[in-house]
Length: 464
Image (cartoon, rainbow, N blue to C red; front, side, top):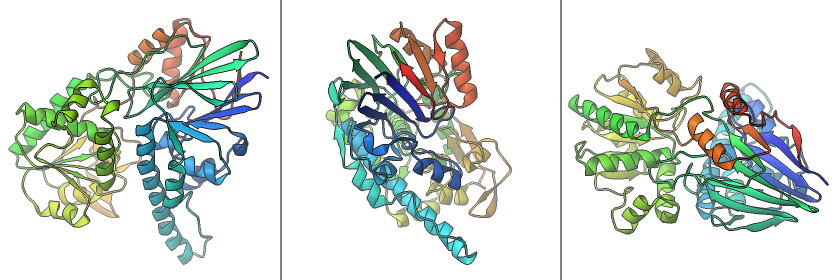
């Protein structure tokens, strides 16, 4: 039977990554990401599986971002009982991320149902609960990098370091079909060379086919060193004004990167030793997972942790879980750094800190991540004069500083460097990118004479 590849999600968009490999009686899933969008649209996309879930033998999770693992509980609710594999760091992070996602699903439905009861509309159910999320995450089998395992009949998998987030993996499948064999690489998402904390992405040789992300397929990042310089400048300028630095940050990886750089700046005495708070229970738990997995980090970070110089536990850094402690920061008038979720300012404790600090010209809102259209974070980046938080308008008087050098995704040059190391390739499939970014990478790679394809959702291709 021919080997087929079906693109279930994460094509011509950056959400809901999932792909199905079929060969004879073997079926293997690569990721099962959560599709994120409007409520009704996303619920339908996350509950309608266009394949027989019960026939899938195995699932491989590349990493713990919700757009790659977040629909795992729904898969179980539909009857999936195959084996799941990921690195041990990904397993631990998935548990936290999925439980948080389940909690959000429940809270969202409670809010919507309050309105629906008033309007006599049908009540909704959460996509999955926190308990269902916890149960599914526990079933992941940990696998080491470079450990070749049989995941279905005639299909073998090996994970390599993707350098994207802690425990992230490039998946390589060796698929046997009668007398021939095919080697398929899955590099979604791919990290950058020289990022703090992480090892550089592994280059893979001998592939026949490659599924490749294209998030920044038409862009170039500033050097990561620029992030450290701009971070220093923003903090020092704000301290001179006797203000606070608010950093809305994604809990997984971005928060830990910012902490790492703050530690470096303090060691170098490039910034004064002011209080630094991580005000997010989830980010606090994730950072604890980081500290328990030093083997997944680069040599410098690993040696620092093992040598008692933990970059995530320096003297002026404090992690906050308690809500009362979080509220108390608003009455503390000292200059300080507050790192808090969510990354796009759409929910979480950062909203309360913004309410209390956004109108003060002494303060700085420091943007270190991507802000999607129609989010509060995007309106802050655009420096809209008045922004609405919890239905109340506030004047944006605080300074806004945007640092674009923070990114865990390879840019167009780094993607090309990765591809060039994989050559020769029969075909490259571009996924995980907005259409204009995928198209830019497609144009570059085809100009270099490569066979490239941009699939659409539910398209199925044969691998020969």
